[in-house]
Image 1 (cartoon, rainbow over the protein chains, first blue to last red):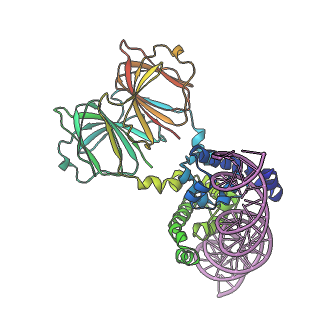
Image 2: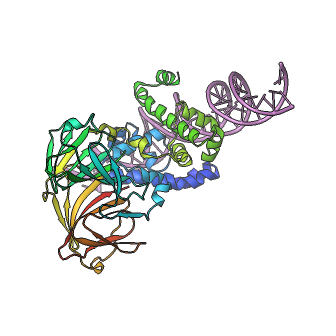
Image 3: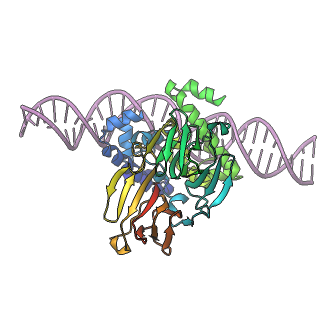
Length: 204
Length: 204
DNA sequence: ACTTGATGACTCGTTTAGGAAACTTTTCCC
DNA sequence: GGGAAAAGTTTCCTAAACGAGTCATCAAGT
């Protein structure tokens, strides 16, 4: 009933938007119910009126970006679904592989990196194997840091991972760690041979 | 000058939103100029008024979600930056580690999973080590698939990775592969011992 | 020099969003 | 079943969004 009403009051181009308002409203209602929140609780958490939320869920209003943004955060909704028709969700058939030792080399003073699966340029995770040449944290002039998250797995040897805010972490083959890469971090080998680790890095 | 104006006309909470409107406006203007579009061209492409676009860029209005969405698409702007800014960028000091063999076990008919760094519940990447018990692709009743991307590294043994759209990929220790996990995929061991692989999975 | 056209910012009238309050529906308990 | 409370929807009013048109500025051409 309400979608029909919206179509009558708007121009034709608005008619084509109506499905999106429905989808958005349904998405928000589903998320709210999943979390067991009432209209009032969710509205309060997002700092909007409960009547506003009702109207959004029932596709009876075109909400501002700010309100949607606040709702997304409150309901911990994933954002890309809202922009569904973007190029990103259309790309779904990529594959690239790297044979052992055949990645693309990048050398720094402290690490010897081997970038993996590098034919794929638009991948969101960046995997690379590093041989840790550093033996002393003093070899790092400054903390390395970049926004996002990182996972590390020790392939061989032993290392100590230094990060801000935590004690150094001693790790050996098969151990793994996950951390926010916004913290300064650095890794040194503590085994006889230079350790090898696999890093997977994810930006913002 | 305009931000000061906005603060005077609104309540205090609006004052705290003003930086976001500025950032948004700047982001949109930068993207538009990058693409060499005039106000008029971009507005036309997004089906909004050019004065509206000017006001958005100058943080003189709180645009509707629909308008922002259309602008994002027109200017091919990445969406998460608009939302993730607050919650996620505030969280920046997490770390969790898993010693070898100490992950959380999850068994299926075809794999024996060991979830890593599982104390962190809100991490975007999901790393896990899997022992591949499957020996024949027929053991998979259907393709496994989920939106997002996946990286796999062979820790030990040999496997064949089957995905839709590609020939089977034979891999051994040290080899790695990256693929869109929306494609059906499955993995079988081809070595005598059940192979072990490290997967890192990233949703949408 | 002046003229023209492009560009971005501003103005103003119309429409609609958003929230408080009122109303309606649903749920829960006796 | 009835009654009360909780939950959701609708109404009404005010402020602001939105876009067509206007204004100001700048650059290019004659």
